[in-house]
Image (cartoon, rainbow, N blue to C red; front, side, top):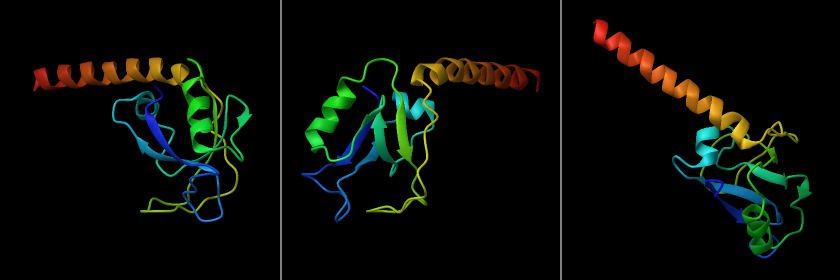
Length: 124
């Protein structure tokens, strides 16, 4: 999976009078967590160019399940972390890069940082 849960939809509104889809939870060590760009509370506007407006929750879930390996999300960032419904800034995008384009270099960078830290500790 993509490593996050969603809430919302026309049949399960998360925010009163708003049927948008929101990120409710980022799963630790999942793809979204490792990528680092998606945040809990973000509003997801589109998946691979497919608009999520006016979808039932289960239809949105199916879009994510069938999104494939390279996934592009258009999101609207929340203003600040808080419990319950969230506020939003103007329309923002995730940048449209596939998760794999960030995950592979990100993991390589993390491995290099760990290696450097271990080498540094050995010299002390």
